[in-house]
Image (cartoon, rainbow, N blue to C red; front, side):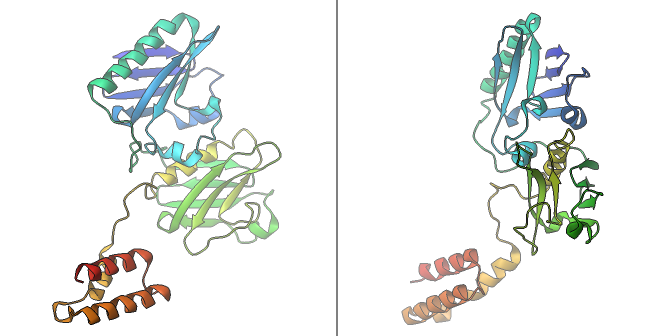
Length: 293
C-alpha cells in the first residue's frame, strides 16, 4: 500500500486501484467535497506526475481519454481547485509523493497497462441521486430522469412552461460550460426531437449559469447523465430492426443476374436519396449487392 495523507486529501494505492479522498481542510473546494471519494482502477490510468514547488508541490493524474464521464462532460473546463485528479503536497512530504508516483508508474509498467483512448467508461460517474441549484434553476437526477425546476430569476418565457422532466432514454447529449468573464455558462441537455439553438436563457432544457460558487456542481449532474449515455467512441452497433431492413433489401439467389443487381443498386440509391434508408443502412445494403456482382 502506497499512501500520502495531506490537508488537501488522501491518495492510497493498493496495486489495483487508486483511492482519492478529498481533505476536510477549509481550502478544499465545494465541488471536490460534494463529489466525494473516487476509486480509479489501474486500467483507467495513463500516467502520473509530481511537480515540486518552493512551498508546495502537486501530484497530477492523467487518465486515458474517454475513461471518465466527468472529464468527458467538463472537457477540461474545471478550475484546478476543482480538479479531483490533482493533490497539493506540502514540502515536507515530497519524498512520500515521489514514492507514491513511482509505485503507480511501476504498476503501470508491470501490468503493461495500455494508455490509448477507450471506447467505454471505466469510472461510474458521480453517485445518484443528486441535485444542484445555481443560476436560474435546479437540476436533479435520479439515474433515470433529469428534472429541471426554475427560480424567481428565470426568464418569464422559459418559466412559463413549468418544470421539465427529461428521461435519459430521450437525451442525446449533455454539455456543461462554466461562465467566463462576461460570457455566461450553462448546463444544457440535447433532447431527441426537440433540438434548439435558443440561448440557455430561453432554452427549457438548459440551466443558465452566472459564475457563482455553486456553478461547478452542475458539472456533477452533467457527468452523472453522461455516464448513462452511449460512449462517444463506442462502435456503432446495428440494431436487430436495422439488420432486418437491410436483409430484406439484399438480392436473393434467384435475382443474381447482372442487370438485376444494377437495378437493385439504383433502387437503393433512390431509397437513400429520399430518406427511407439511413446512411448506415444504405452502405450495408450496397456492399451486399456489390459482393454478388
